[in-house]
Length: 147
Image (tube, rainbow, N blue to C red; front, side, top):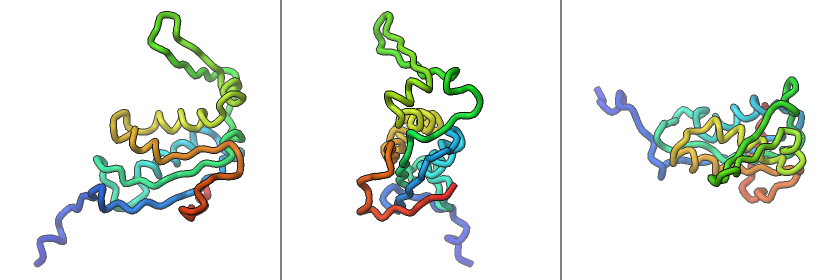
């Protein structure tokens, strides 16, 4: 009997094959969209998933300014940031964030669902978010991902 057939195979970062996907975020709920994106960025949808290797795919999100929240989150949800200096804490509601930086709504939601370490910082670099219908990644021949 072949002993290698029972051995668990761990993917190496050199062996990872990345696919490209496009997601149209029009009228999608932010949290549900972010969980799907985080799953694909981590590579958990693949059979070769390895927790300590970045084996996920690249995701392009278009129409990020047309996402939606449920309930009254447009007014109640607050995004905070802190400069590190006294009095340097700043806040924006989701409605203000949609006007000033609409791509950050999706990015913050996805970033919160990824690991908080070097691997998570590497994974978030494979996420490309655009507010319009156009994206400059046509050369990668991305597939449309239906959610």
